[in-house]
Amino acid sequence: EIICGLYIILISCSPTVNAINAIFANLTEYEHRNSCFPSVLRQQMRDISREMFYHGYNSYMRYAYPNDELNPINCSGRGADFDKPDNININDVLGNWQLTLVDSLDTLIVMGNASEFRRAANKILDSLNFDNDNNVTVQVFEATIRIIGGLLSAHLLIDDPSVPFDIRPSGYHERTFLEIAHDLANRLISALETSTTGIPYPRVNLHHGTVDYRFSNITCLAGAGSLGLEFGVLSRLLCDPIFENLANRAVAALYSRRTADGLLGNRIDARTGAWLDNFSGLGAGMDSYYEYLLKTYILLGNQLHKEMFDSVFAAVDKHLRIGRERCNHGNGRPPLYVNVVLTDSETLATSWIDALQAALPALQVLRGNLDAAICGHALYYAIWRRYRAMPERWSWRDRHPTVEFYPLRPELAESTYFLYRATRSPFYLHVGRDIVEDINELTRTQCGFATLHSVINKQLEDRMESYFLSETIKYLYLLFDEDNYFNIKEDKYLFTTQGHLFPMSVRNLHSKCSDYSIKDYRQLISGNLNSINSTNNNSNNNNSNNNSNNICDNLGDMSFSVPLKEVYFRQIEEMVGLS
Image (cartoon, rainbow, N blue to C red; front, side):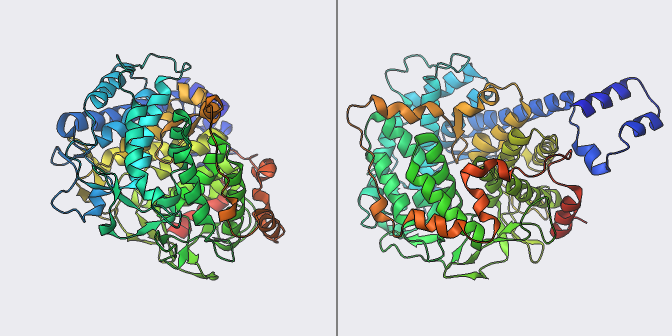
């Protein structure tokens, strides 16, 4: 800020070039650009982010609502594919449940738009009905994080006395978002209750609330093990522990199937409990399992999940991490988390990383390992800069996308936001500016924002996923809106994997319940957690530094003006093919 202020003063005084150079003589071009982000530019980027949200939101309401998603090229809506029930790419997410509006509710609150929130809330309260011709099969995971999460976040914020404006819809007591979320959860719960392994079946028929076995028993680590926040909060609001207990059982059942090296796989058969893919990683199909182990501890106080998180991440750091030991020190290639063979952790399974892994730096911030977060983010930012978007998969060996589309995913924006809040480095404001401007230029249409079918030729595809409004734009807006209530009170809220805001106060809700028993699923977990942690923490690599008691040891050297030293930044650029 001091450097930024000096720059503005010098410019306003019309100084000579020599005078400016004298002030910035000790800064390289890299440091000069990234050490300053003027307030006026920050306000401009905030306003652009807000305008982008309303361009997408208003287009959805005008052209698509009450359908689930907006087709931003044809200016129309899309819902479930009743003609092709096996079209799970569509039907897993689209259940004819006003998806984009439900998913966007708390973004309206973040934007401070109380009147539009109340209008949107009343639309949902008046018309959302899962019995209304909803004979469609949906994915349990997507229904939970998008619909139940959106409804619970809105309900909690309506009842949150600290929210600084009135968002309560008229007549809210007659029907609440909690009641709707409970209705949906009751339709999903058969996927958990009927499983003999404890691993939820992936899909249910929404109308009947029964498991739909037509679409196989195959689920994934993230899909089966990332229900804990939403189901836990629902249980505590209802004083009914069944949802939280079944979600916790699923987490433990998956954890119990880790390998001798402590690793977990990707796809798994819910009926037999057998892994179906012989690789382990941190990207698609796996990411949010690790995220929710830590976040259910933070929000709900689940100590067992914290122990499990420490255990599995010690194994991840030991077997999946390659490159030099520290981000900002030493020699060697940049740190990178790779996919390894599940049954042979010394062997690479693939040479690609995927877009969902770009959220890992945000998790590393929560974990307290800022050093790892900085390097991981820098890699994904370099990939973004090369293509002005994030390819779904990218080969670090061939330096080329293996899956070229970009469906407006939020993960890089999320990590950028978390790293800025942790470091306050202007570098991350520059990253956010790049993301905003690239999305606005490359994907904007007359009626919204479209998926990039290819990050190479920039061809568009006619789909705007709901998470663009619920996550991508929310994180970008918060990045630039320094005085936003949810930034000022950032320690009072936790973001779900879908970007929904849950107040930290929910941790103690069940203390008001007359009978609330959280089951202990340690008996499902093979092996002793303490012995696992002891074994891993005595290893000779840097993994022992990841214990939460050593957070300050992981902050790295922040004495320079940008989070990543220029020599390492240039190394990552070369790795990605930018130089």
